[in-house]
Image: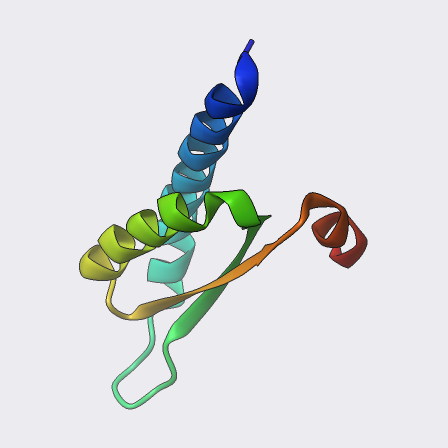
Length: 83
């Protein structure tokens, strides 16, 4: 079990990284042809994860430049409403 706010943030950042890693094969299957639009993945997460996710997205973008990651960052209640 994760204890404390910092532990929950670390857990959430690791979970987000895992989701991006799991999304990579699907993005590969839908890899664009030449001159086609890039694959886009939207990640919804708590606004408190902005810095951690920015670093994760940078690394993912280096590995998969053909995949665009759109971060949807907001308060948890707002995200729950959106979902």
